[in-house]
Image (cartoon, rainbow, N blue to C red; front, side):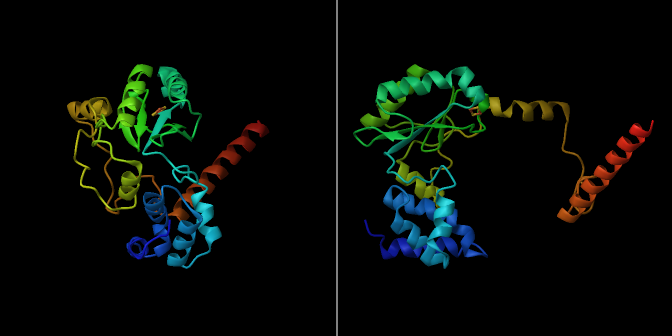
Amino acid sequence: MTLTPETYDELRAIGARYPEPRSGLLPMLHLVQSVEGRITPEGIEACADVLGITAADVSGVATFYTMYKRRPVGDYHVGVCTNTLCAVMGGDQIFQRLKDHLDVGNDETTDDGKVTLEHIECNAACDYAPVMTVNWEFMDNMTPESAVTLVDELRSGTEVQSTRGPRIVTWREAERVLAGFPDDLADDGPAAGPASLVGLGIARERGWTAPPSDASGSSEGVADTKAEAVAQADTSRAETETKQEEASDD
Ligand code: FES
């Protein structure tokens, strides 16, 4: 597929959002995925052209982050968290069950092109373990059975609602949102769930607040600049070494 002039315009528009256009490379790569279904050599060249950098520079970024795919992704990218907490809460069983049910391995797509299954790392959603994602929207407190129902619904075209987000759109549509072109679904569906807000509730109940800041906006004892942080680290190291020398003299 050839990238259209409209896509080039959108790539340039992304770069123009930033003081340094190169800072727009990550959303630009998401735009490429929304158009081509993956990161293609043509997409890499297009980003390089627009930013005035080399294809190798772009490729180095695209191959570093796991959200950029070199192989075509199905309509629904289904992630199963198999990191520690989700794993012990059932994530490993969910992943195995889905592999069997869909007849695919990790990072593989079903024959009908609908579902790509991938085991993913901690999504900072451990309070709802085991969690899954569909096109990066959360599906909380999953079980092997609810996971099978979920992928069956996705494959049959049934509308699916994320447990803490909007209705599920296709992977390409979600990639366009990640490129910074909103679909106005951000406020559709619930956001933070009760389990994530327990700490906030306790803090409010007990009148806890964040430590006060001084006039410069920094908390006491926290370095304002990198130079201050380095100086603090040097002082601390020197104090430790002095104490160690005194201890060995004793
Ligand atoms: S371990 Fe799965 S979300 Fe943290």
